[in-house]
Image 1 (cartoon, rainbow, N blue to C red):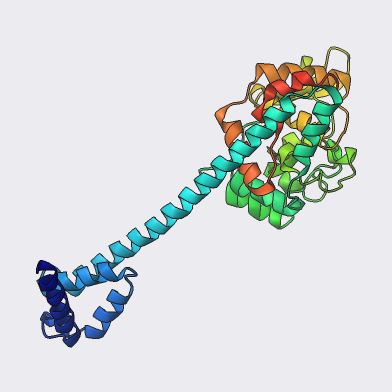
Image 2: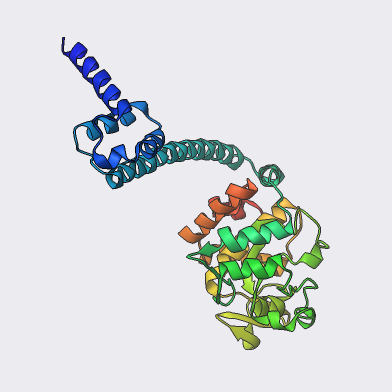
Length: 335
């Protein structure tokens, strides 16, 4: 009995609203706008509830109706976004489980089989091309609160400025990997951000996909980038030739000219070099390898490095196993 009464009441309210008989003066003068606003509400039941509130006077002005429909639109969008987010979370969780199973399987292997399995895991990635990779690095991968921090000196640059300069070819990159020619094209670029190839471009003749593989790319201010050039990494002893922000250029204990990154970047760099060596089957010289192993231990993976890894994976679609499992470096006798 009560169901029939409710149904009849609903029909009556709908008829009254359609005719405009129960609209307040404000609504009756804007009937077309009322219908337009109501059409914005996707859920028919919620739309009917609004009509009921108009009929009984709970919504008595156009301003109140506009506010109600705006709020409902935001709610519906939030629900759709929430559903999309939940799907993304579920997919990420599934991908994570698959990755962990792969790691469990690989961890059982030894020697060349272990290294080859890691190489296969790393090799399945999307190459963005160099310009796109730089753009992603400046605007997403290394962008926090609109700023990008140079890994060697800690200098901060605006993310959008880095992208603009890079997109327009104004960064004067040290493509030659030599300090002397670093700013030959545009001397004014010495105060800008560059893209550092931890594994120097000249070593692989700027070929793809190595050139745009973000796992070994980092933002650096142009002076530090040009200073490093293609010098090997190491520990500077004695008075440095150049130093800023904790990084140095000078000579190591064996008299080699080396570049020493600041302490907070050493482990990140080591794991990038391990990745590149395995991914592209390129050797690391013995002196650098010994140094990288020490840095891998002394500067362990932190939350920022993990977040960066997740961001890279989201666009390049592969992982650096030495970030997920730094101990894997110990399973490889010779990089």
